Image (tube, rainbow, N blue to C red; front, side, top):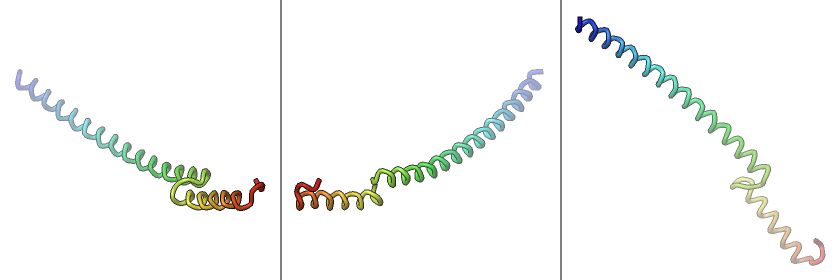
Length: 81
């Protein structure tokens, strides 16, 4: 009687462990997929924001050059602001 109960419990425990591992795998796959999607969207959003505001390495340098040129023009030609 006790052996049968132990066997049933062992079988049930093994089945639950297998289901748990399956669920963990599914959740890890979904998590990796969501992280990848987030990273892709983050890069696009950062690029859009940098272009809009003129910041970052790619868009900030031309903006700074234009600002320096504008300030030099103001200093060179006073009263033209």
